[in-house]
Length: 200
Image (cartoon, rainbow, N blue to C red; front, side, top):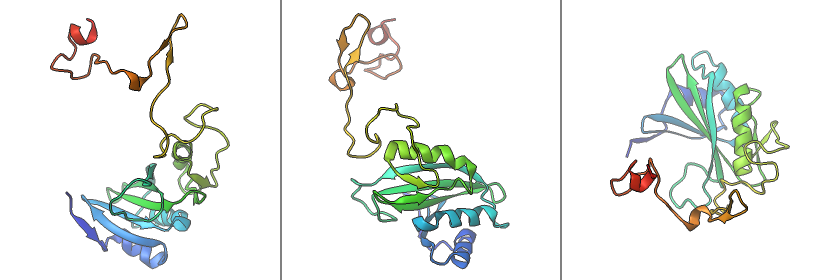
């Protein structure tokens, strides 16, 4: 496992502690990457500081992702059912920073769209798949899932499984979990791409 360093004394951590002393919950370096765990309510101010500080210039919003920790039994950086993790890049420093916030059901995360316009679609994806609401980017319709989809499929309590497939001619086929067949491209007893697997 990679080295874990707390209280990194990085430039980013020092700037954050000076400008927003209550925002930072924890800073660490893990496997060579800097993580800043911040209070959910202050994520917008933290992002604006990282982006606009002339010594940092984290101007490139790479992505943000959601994580459901409801069934995670190991040590965590933050408390709360979910985490939203932002991946920001500074071309000036030629490095990334990962900024994390915790959120529970019923809580909202301030949207980063006012700071990074590129946050709009990733935030909408997180709402669609996890049900995490971003204040200032409230979603009124589905983004990735069909309009009539019920629930948020990346939540841990969401049931796995599938539906019977309706084939031409009106026949229904088995759901994915009912039958597993090897196909070309899978490694199956050394027969990948052979007639026994692919029918070719």
